[in-house]
Length: 414
Length: 137
Ligand SMILES: Cc1ncc(COP(=O)(O)O)c(C=O)c1O
Image 1: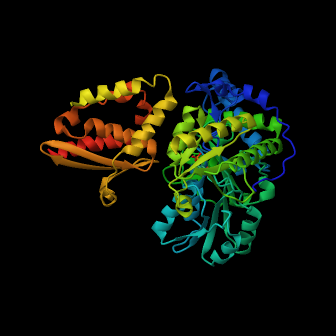
Image 2 (image 1 turned 180 degrees about the vertical axis):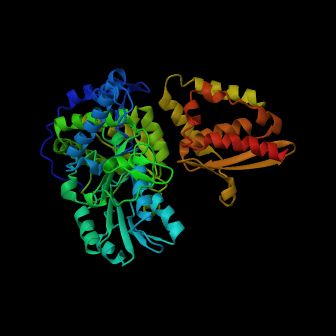
């Protein structure tokens, strides 16, 4: 059984749901049940209002102006940096760089390392359940530099085979780039185990936290990895922004690959002197409203605390897995009990696309397909899966309705 | 029968479901199940239309100035939609196929399946049917 004990969930979900106007919507004449939070979460009024407030009161470009609005928007932007840094327990907020999201962050890291540490013929280790975003940037480098990508395989229960990892590392392994939580299976990577290997062999550890940051407390001071990245839009914030945390040892050592306005101290045609700290990586006008909205999202979730959110979601995962296990036609992937708020499954002899299409007719939003993890789909030997993923506003009643309709869908398809 | 006549026949056939979308989808699934499959050996790479999620194979042939289609899909709802397209377009003159607007899809309330998400490959399939018709005449 896939059950982990969770005592109770102290969230007042009924009240929380009132903060998310979209949850009042009808979809195909049914109340919306939003189980696609792994793709992006819905936004609370607090975030929507922060963005509206920014545009109605403060809008101005940041960092360079002397006028009042520019000063105020710079202050709001830098306060957002402090708020988000504190949330992830990043001691020096200059270690937190705003990017356009997880994908952008990974590209900045991979490109930077390719200009410094990575040499022709080097190796990079990834896991079998990586999102394409954490494969492609490394693969592009490998193709151009005769490099090699090595893959940590999965065990029977689809958790990572950490013993195999030890055997994959060689003197040429420079980077281990790994997802903290699998976006497809929901399985949580044991970062302490990976870190041990990385430290022993002096590998740079890059953590894709796109799916962990929304669901659990992430303490980056304690975690002490080289890089950690995530997207705001999966944590109740706006699209188009995310973070790149770098360990302080990288702050002046990661070569910049995206120069531009904002990243400099002085420029002449002969020589440019770049800024120090986070600004050196933030080329061009950033997504100011999204950064401010992201901070509003962080303040919002901190009203409840990540522990409470984690407990609530784990409670939902266990409940849903228990209910799914009662349907004989359903196969759940990722049997290891250490899971975050994501469940992938299939209905025997049915295409996930059909299941998702029919559930949508009942107002239930699920994601179907390969979830940007095609290599994992090949390993599981399926064209795709149906994925349900939860957030703090989901309820057991929604799961009950989903299970009832899933049973109906199965009879329709058989 | 002409394309228009077949379209009207299908519209009538779906009218009985009214607001009962479950009945409509059950019918669509049945149509998918009854679609004559294209032969396994015909499911070659050049016949494949890759949607993001479901895949469609389309085989086009010309006989006596008419174009005949057979097709398959790995998803049953897509296959039901494919069955409808084939019923309307297969055995028609190429020119009629190229000019067809396929308005019946909207009228029977299934136009969401032609959305630009590319998930099911149906839009590409219709384009391919028309392209094949152009090539074969
Ligand atoms: C594990 C993981 N990595 C990376 C990404 C890419 O995130 P974004 O599209 O916000 O850059 C996602 C989003 O789906 C993800 O789940």
